[in-house]
Image (cartoon, rainbow, N blue to C red):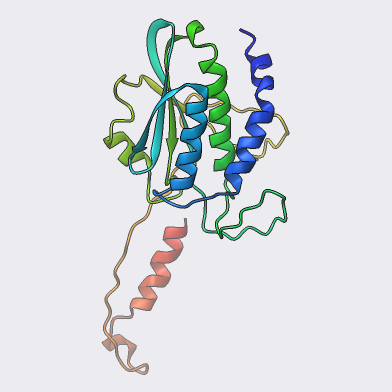
Length: 222
């Protein structure tokens, strides 16, 4: 199978899927329009899938013609609460925006799904297609995993990608691959500062919580 030629054949499909998804961006765990759109495309391809995995996630499954391991391909599909002002013909109209490329991620995975499903008899093992909500927060991976996204059949490895110029190696058409950790994940913590007021002329009689905030905040930013 000439995988490059097959990929080029679905290029127009991927562009169309991405632009249609770009017009219906949704935020968080509940993505009714986006999930419905993804499910419709998988159904049209004849791929078996489960909806509402971890609230609104979708898991498709392509069973290969030979026994083997199960590889999962993962794409996020949520957007950000940002008003789009690009003026594009396919711009969002609902107040949200796919400003982080998740519309492209979902469209790319649909393209991969189409190529693999049309050549599934040549595959050794299975391919799971994981469309995840809430990558931007509050965290859509955990509820999908807890809902069995990586089971039946059990997933042996997961691969994903991210579009964009995220490093200094900015070159159109360049694909970078990492076999280990590639990007760090953010983390959050809450800090409650309790102080005791006093007269400004006698600061030594109080506990100034604003001073502690000035100390901790720069450390947090580091």
